[in-house]
Length: 407
Image (cartoon, rainbow, N blue to C red; front, side, top):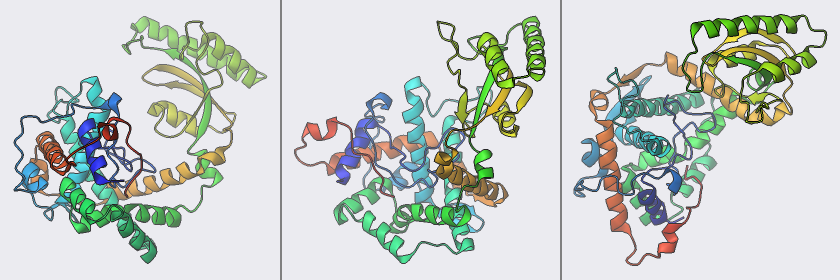
């Protein structure tokens, strides 16, 4: 696909898509999307930010994008991971990706990078996005260190394929992409080969998902919920909470005494559970839930995974209220094998990250991340405008852009 269309999509959406790394507010790479390789800017009108987010910025094209937006050079070291230096162009690329992802996901709800998630704290969402960029950079460095340790570095064929993909749109488009993202040739190759590192390490470190691994990853549960909060998630009065606790104890006693636990659980769940009832009073999920780590509140998830098949929990308290949980059989657990392997590798790399020696350059923490993103986006829009064909068919930029990655 022509890079012009990619940059056109960027201007229209006001945000860069992350085809290989969806960084949430916690800033952790997600299973299957770990490396933060470059993805196609996508047109998603439902999540679009202001199409011209920095209309008053006077762009100075005599400087490159990183000098203009951050006062840094591509080769400046912003982060060191166990002795591995990560250059500014990569760290700032991931910072821009994280900011763009935040803007695309949360801008429609009125959140801005300059807002503070904790009104009493000093950190802004932009600061969290900087931490996100650091985590992605560290993840990539550790992935390469892991590949060297396991002896599974990219093959010559994988390197050649990455370089061929990099140049798929021709030299002119390759140079335009470098200008728009501020990336050196070395960093471009770093990003394009990232998937090969991940695939190789995944195959070497987690070659298969065992039954035990799957049992600690995907789970199926039914639960009885007695809520201790109202519809606005505000706590109920203490006397009502005490009544809910007593009711939960009574229901648990009935279940523990039941001759047919499954039948009794369904009976009490349908009669008393306050989980997601519709206007007709019916439960939203009468057959229970099939979930993987991260999908449920921590207390519920931990209790569910601790149960054996067919086992009943005690009373589990979460931010929603009191739960009684019954673990059931997952249908076709083998369907979750690939995700389970990716999760297991992420757990390994997360453990490595906790033990790693990270050194952040003062220039990184001194950077105004929100201001950087504003300037970075304005510069890209200007580059896009200058690169536009003399006559552009509006139909080429008005519809959805092709999906796909360049990593």
